[in-house]
Length: 220
Image (cartoon, rainbow, N blue to C red; front, side, top):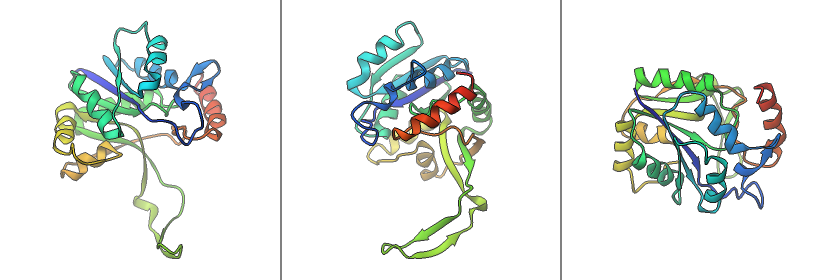
């Protein structure tokens, strides 16, 4: 079985500030490097980084020693970026992961690889621990939602390659923010893989301090 990975890095980091969050350094290593190294340690044959044009040059320097890493230009949306990656990959199964989730571990990646062979479509998730309220447009609480069946979506998500490629081809005119959602929309089953609450997505500068703690816990 041949595994590939798509790392999304096409955003502009508008909520982070004037710099691209993926190039922010923690202990002298860029966030994107922590992310990619976890996949390198998991025996993924080919990795495609779908990047914002503004950082392709920097990424090429960071990863120039790796022959199995390809850096391409992402699209205007997450969906189009992933589709660009799918078009250049040749594999049986593909893992799709946010570049801004550097706390992902090889252990979770390997569990995801194992699960996708059996299930064909899986998503790393964590059980919701907060109480969730439904609120109307005026800010009035309508009801409290039963959280016993609620999960928070993380990445990676993993799919049989031909399944997710066909989903992107069939839904090319849509704008999904979640690849599992595309598969669900087409009536296919998607199953969960247990994630980790530390596998946060770095979005704002306040996330950096938390990421530093978690990365140190992972001995990175």
